Image 1: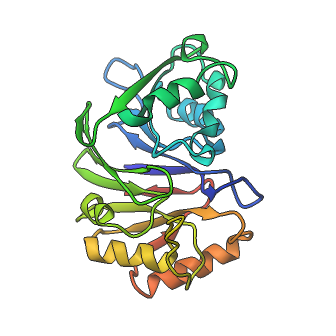
Image 2 (image 1 turned 90 degrees about the vertical axis):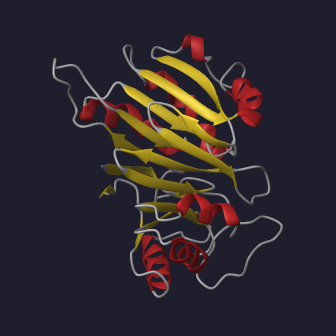
Amino acid sequence: MKIFFLGTNGWYATKTGNTVCAAILAGKGPRGSRGKPSGRLIVLDAGDGFHKLPALMARLGITRADVFLSHLHLDHAGGLHTLPRLKRGMSVRIFAHKSYLPALSRLVAHPYTATAEEQWAKVTLQPLRTGKNRLPYIVQALPLDHADPSFGFRFSLEGKEIAYCTDTGPCRNILRLAQGADALIAECTLAPGAKEMKEWPHLSPEMAAREAAAAGTKRLILTHFDANKYPALALRAAAQKAARKIFSRTIAARDGMEIEI
């Protein structure tokens, strides 16, 4: 299993990267027994790094993608404006918690962008409920701690467990989602040594590392680096170093990174 990082910034894009978007390759191979594309990409949020998805799908020979939105802040959903870059024959299901589906339906529509029905690819919007959702795989969705409702996910894929928690302060549901997981992909908005922000909750590298250690996850991957606090990639290296003092198996992601799980 491989995770591709298409965008790793939080808030806005800079020379360090696009806003947050990652993709998990789920499937035994790029082509099935009859030579047709098999498998799918599990896409984590749709910041402006989402515009790289069509090229990744073409490279991998994948025609299906499931997009999971943690919430609708525009650094997580604004990339949906680039849905028209997907080609005919591609199929994309966009999942958001059922409480967000009305707002998502307004976002993927005029006057903001083309509607789902107007896309070249087959695009559908689908609700998630709190707790377990059974698709061709299992995804668990639980609320996190943020200024607006944000949801974390745990994916059960091919014998692997991947947790994704972004736009959140420390909270019990991170531990529930990441318990014993093969990887926890977590945000790193705050700088090393920062204190908790009660009015706009986020994680520092140390906070994320403590969550990973408490959950017993096998690997921590940091993403969603605040564009103001991390204007250079060297600062991400410092965040990685700070996190590794608490949880040694930490990686600071950057755009274009591919990680085997």
